[in-house]
Image 1 (tube, rainbow, N blue to C red):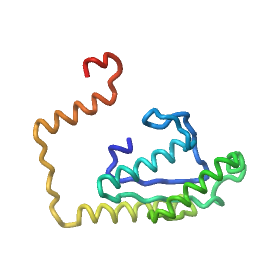
Image 2 (tube, one colour):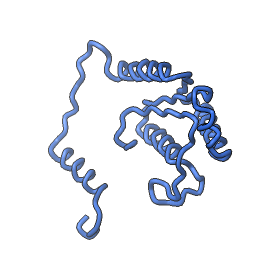
Image 3 (cartoon, rainbow, N blue to C red):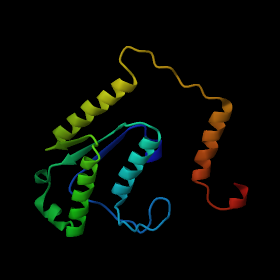
Image 4 (cartoon, rainbow, N blue to C red):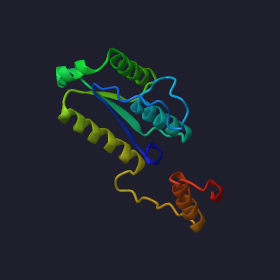
Length: 155
């Protein structure tokens, strides 16, 4: 899904998340990253390859969550979440802290609107991208190939 997103909003609360055995490409998850961390890193890498920065991150203040739920998280997961947050801050990513749901919604609206206004300035006509028939066919085939199972010789 991250590959198809023009904008990425990363929201981190009190949970680090599930740690799959394998990464998205099928290789072993030796770093023991959560699926959330994998998606975040993938979004950053994708946008850097494209020369774009269309992302921001929101970190929830721990005090807003149920204390019992927070305490259920393992020490390893709590540490990994803090390390992920520190990693994003150290990279100079755009990070905002929120205290409650209203803060969260307001920050998402403000920052997404800012990015949209930069990409599509108010009052300016947006040029539609022209695709050739071959471009459209190529996109359709790529989508079909991603979900293809079986008879690999027909690819």
